[in-house]
Image 1 (spheres, rainbow, N blue to C red):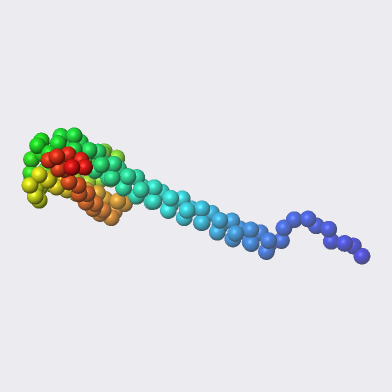
Image 2: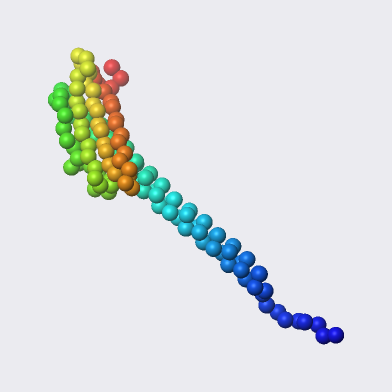
Length: 130
């Protein structure tokens, strides 16, 4: 009797390897797409928060007496990297004597979804901690 000593892969082994390879490639593609989406979303949120924080600190530097009540469009001050369309408003009010309320509203398009964030702080006539 002769022994069949052929080396190689059977068709079942080749099909199994192709299916497993396809699943791995599809999974890697999904992971990369999700990473891109989440990194863009996180970038926009960080830009928005950083802008609001810097704007509040700039207003604190101006001081209580330098702030006049009213609404201002600050869209042109937003970071260029923030997704379009975008807009921002600054509202300064005086809820009580010796206290000014600062409201910053930022809206931008986050991969087709409109995101809006509002920030509020107070600046007192006597300064911080008084």
